Length: 184
Image 1 (cartoon, rainbow, N blue to C red):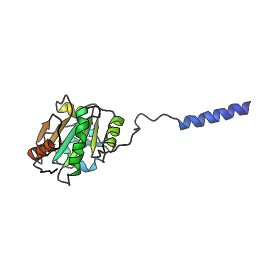
Image 2: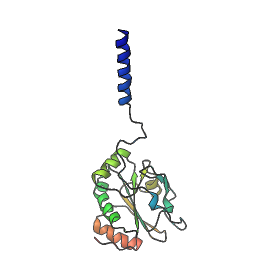
Image 3: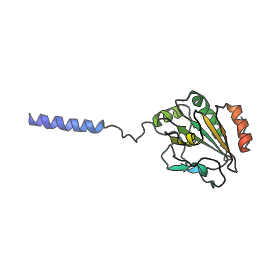
Image 4: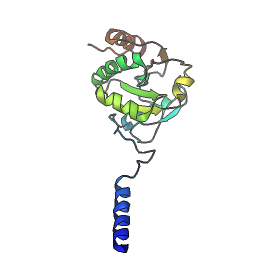
């Protein structure tokens, strides 16, 4: 009888080890996004971008927003935002055409990490993205709704667009606010 009790205890301990809960900080869905190391490097002098530092979605450290490579397009989105869901693949198309002439960055704002990773994976979105569950960057811009797109030209001047865009609108806004011509 004692042997049965010991054996049962060993089996229960082994099962407990196999079914341990995932740590709250461990994501269930891996990040689909690129690392953030390549998006920084600008001198933050004369930029209008709010002074906010956000963690890279992949966990690769903090990114200081004014120190981004320029020109840059920053798309603030969330997986729960219907216009963002339509628009995010448009920004992936822009990122695919960047050819080192500009940088495209996402800011996942007010969202859950797993929801954002799942959505981006489903839509094949992989450009560098920052994680902002407290909406600090959107708040610093005075943005109450999403999506929001920030265009920063080579001189650090910023333009904030507060509506969803399609491909043609994005191409026009790029030329007007960054000086970069992009084709379809």
